[in-house]
Image 1: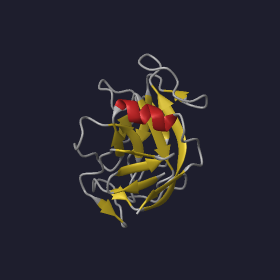
Image 2 (image 1 turned 180 degrees about the vertical axis):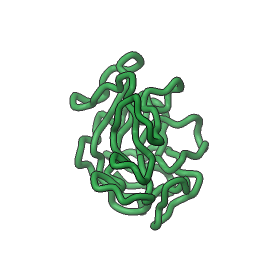
Image 3 (image 1 turned 120 degrees about the horizontal axis):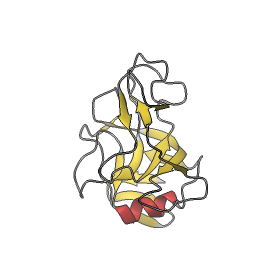
Image 4 (image 1 turned 90 degrees about the vertical axis):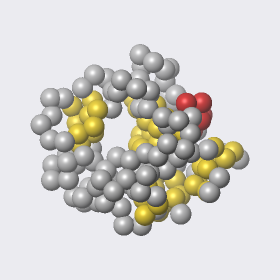
Length: 159
């Protein structure tokens, strides 16, 4: 997979996507809203089993209480955690459909550097052109199509 000015290029297709509100950055930091440049890899896939069928055989269901730590000084920074969780975190099970299907990347993972940024996901967009907090976002149809083809280890080039 390769990000181009036209969208994400994968398996002979180019899929429209939106990026972080902070643009593309080489020196990503927690909270800057930027999408990090570099060669990354897909590391996993989560989905809402009450809303969508599994997008891939290896995808894991998002269950109540699943969270992602975004607290730079936390031992579990940029990792999956479970409620109750006292440090800053993001809920994976959301009221909106943004995380109905989520592909995780190896950005600052598994050995997270405090403050270097967390949770660069591929997920559904709010609407075309609406920026993310640093993730790559796609239409519902596109994220499902990507998840069916981008197994763990799939490279993601953001140049």
